[in-house]
Length: 384
Image 1 (cartoon, rainbow, N blue to C red):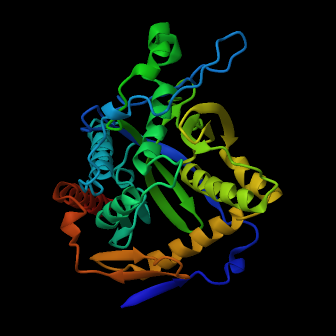
Image 2 (image 1 turned 60 degrees about the horizontal axis):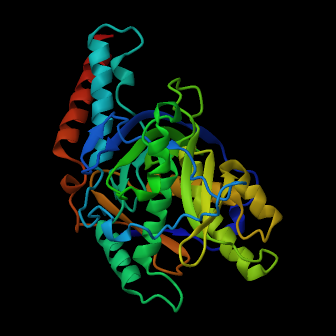
Image 3 (image 1 turned 30 degrees about the vertical axis):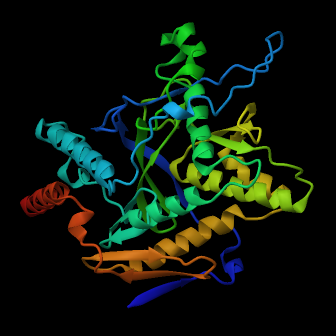
């Protein structure tokens, strides 16, 4: 049976936005230079330090974002990693709490060890179990990537692979591997010559909520400004890095709409995880960096409202809250569901599928770990 969520008459979601809980980080993990997972490790955390160009008194220089393309160390993203990184880290975090509890630390009780959320996800399209884990459909993602990369660029445009590389190159020349105080001048000035690799990643997990739905979200973040604050009550100055062609003439409606749609992607990606700033590296059509602009995530909806008003932030939040309510009511019991929206369709479908078994998504080690936690919770409840 297929359930559908209606996307017509979106004005019904307009108005004051529903409640949102501020994202709070509770765990993090890294992938190293070989893309090996390191749960609860900050090994791949990067620090923002912009490339120096266009400064007064300095010879004119525009970084070439195409430089080093032939030596790019690109991760094999045809491998379906499922939710393994997220689940391994979640398990490591909960096991560390168990150790504290068994060591007699008063603030840790068994009822608080298991991370409880209605939805656990990392940019996802596939759903398993109510109180649900969501992962992206790898086969669809791979087919979409092949389709994009097979398209011949228009005359004067770079290939899709090259434009994807520009983003990684911009990240490479805009970050340091240690805080600025611990970095040499030579390290800073040699960044344009480094071999670019997208194997290392720093990811973090947050607790948040939209409307009545609680979420545990994981996502990659590019870098931090200054140093990462360790106190959980202090917002972390994360920065997301983007590259883009110049937005064109924003007094022209077509250019304004195109730009605001891009801002929607920037805002949604950063807003959900609590990333406060986005640094956009603007480039020429052939990939030379011309300037860097700073966007404050929270102010993007107001900026769009003053412009062509292509989208509304409150409407987006309310629609998301309504869809999450629909999702948690639809997905009941064990099994695997798929979330699907065909191109240009005004509905989202949710249906149970037999194409994928739950064992392929939730690792046996994680399921065993969670069963142990539930047994401990039951024993503690009976002992009261």
